[in-house]
Image (cartoon, rainbow, N blue to C red; front, side, top):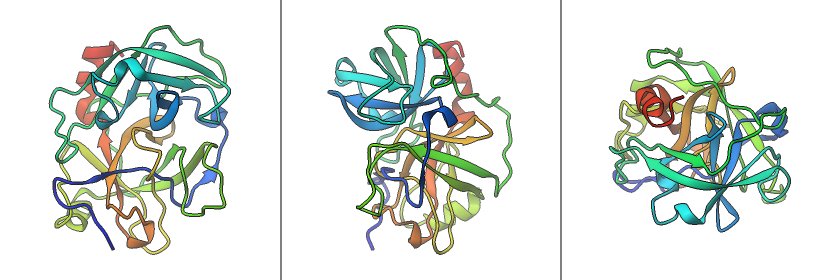
Length: 244
């Protein structure tokens, strides 16, 4: 089995054990695209702002980025918007994916509909109990190669106690206070991996986490939860940048 060593984590890129879902069920989900090709997920937080993972963008790629909204598919339907500006968290640490957040400002404002809606953001002091069942979503390959990868998928993932998660990854990587863990850490687990980096981890339509990283093999059977950027830890920064 291959795992991410400390300082060389692999971004999450695949829904493991997921099911197909319509965009109307999670209308805040977007596809962040480079040269028109899906490579990260993201979430609508207002008519002009999207949040994704910090490692998904940098200043050199911003002019080449677009965001597809309002579609169950990453390669058709919905609307495509250009990016006016990308702002990565100033404390982002690429070696351990700490402060792994970026905000994308769209060139035009979104028109809300049943296919396009903002996700709710938690308050800075919001608390979510260990074991809370959340949902994680995105596009990409699955462990079953017979399944198509162009259709939106989602799966349940339970929040994992911080100490339990830190212990599980003690020789594999650094789990900081800006991270939250979710996924089944028992046999037959489910989690997010390839194609889903930057996508949402939500509880009752409230954004708890941003899909960030996990072990290299991305095999839920290995009983390691996925690692997500903890939204409450950067809530003040989100408001400062986007006024949301």
